[in-house]
Amino acid sequence: MSLNDVDNPDVPEDASGAGEGAIELREAIGKSQGQIVRERFFRHRGAMAALVILVGIVILGFSSVGFWFVPGWWEWAPGQRPDPDVHGYRIFHEGGRPTITMPWSEEGFGIGPHPFGQDDIGRDMFAQVMRGIQTSTIVMVIIGIAATFAGVVIGSVAGFFRGAADQVLMRMTDLVITLPTIALGAVLGRIVGAADPVPLALALGAVTWTGLSRLVRAEFLSLREREFVDAARVAGASNVRIIFKHMLPNAMGVIIVAVTLLMSSAILLETSLSYLGFGITLPNVSLGLLISEYETAFATRPWLFWWPGLFIVALALCVNFIGDGLRDAFDPRQRRIPSARKLAAAERKLERREAKDTNVAATS
Image (cartoon, rainbow, N blue to C red; front, side, top):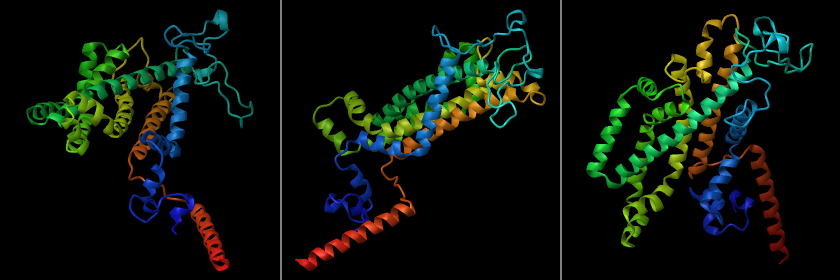
């Protein structure tokens, strides 16, 4: 008996040996592929923590200052300035310092009217940063959708049909790859109108699909030689049905992982373009635009950079960690390494079971 048998004594003989796939086979018994992937993802602590933080940031950004026709719960709107006749002040603290105080300070914990501070004309930075989170999230999602659609279609057609279609599509992909992404995105953003995040995101999605298309093509080149594809052809299935019904579901693991990493880089790309002045422009607000707008005040009012920069890093890291968790969940070769405490407990359990078997054999 091995340690693998201790966790599941009902596991069949061929799944309890020391073979390379023994652990994976034991975990897969009686479960669908979706259940296996979901359980592996939920066991990834970094991915789950990142998912909770990402959802919290998105909810905070969209609920605080409102979105579209839904009002927010925060007192200030993005761009709003306090009225001295109504609020009694224009700049609450000298220099627009943040009003939030920590629990270890003399005042104790408190938020105040402007927890992230104010800019030089009195606008509330919390409202500005929340609107920037909205813009960056919208750009990230639209880029992910547009790049996924283009990359999957181009990669699947090139990998399935090969020949002339593969040559034409891959040479077009190589051409897009050779062009600087930031420069091409800046030009396309200016053409379609960078003041609105939706056209800018569509333009950026039109130049960020290349890596995904190559991954999908490589996956389809491998899948098209599998037996289930030959069986579908013999059964009379059309090429469209084979691609979307049989091959694409088997490539979803690669696609999902690539899309999450693409969306993480999309946040940084939009931030870079906005910082350089080629991305989101006023009157819209983005996190990169906030950093660019207040770069001259870095030495005197650094809080104008702390909060936009913090949320840029948080969004990018969260999406990256989620992508890592999805990669581990979809990869059947990933294994969990048990801790020393669990190994010791398994050893004790194995010794007790062997002692019990010995006693039963001696009495019989």
